[in-house]
Image (cartoon, rainbow, N blue to C red):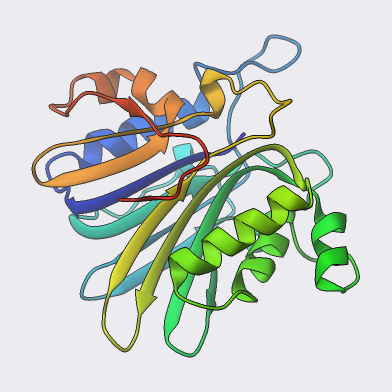
Length: 245
């Protein structure tokens, strides 16, 4: 289980408490416990992208709760803290978001969940990549699709659903920047196979105010830093739909 947050608008007044809430639940997740009952953290690196009149992008090996997150004020911002799935590679090169580009646009992807690398690789008719995580293989699949960001994401999701390649959940954030038009877009998606219990800790929530919107991993809402914010009512993101922030 990784933790993610996606912001859009003028979020200067809430950024510090939101990051404090994010760090808190990444160090001690209130909705998860290790099998032995100990504290459940998200220690395996973190990364972010912020797009406004500049693009700032970074990936780090240290836990986000031990890091100094740059103070962002507005634009389109995504942050991800990793909890590595069993059997997946660890290291700064595997932290999210992942970055790629085509003829017109750049894309950054963050993922929480588990995909079947072998099924996706077989579909793409390539060997199972050794130096890529399941999220990176999905991103490779995404980049092979035609169209704009939303179209690519729709097609990639349909493919992994048809392949039954979603092992647990598919929580996805996608940020795109069109270098020609300057358009910036933030997309979110959440779903799980029918046989999977869709628990509270797997959900994505949305909230905001008149200046900004945010979509975030459910745990963040349980932080004391979050509860004091003047935000609209929290809503659970609908399953199986791509939402534009």
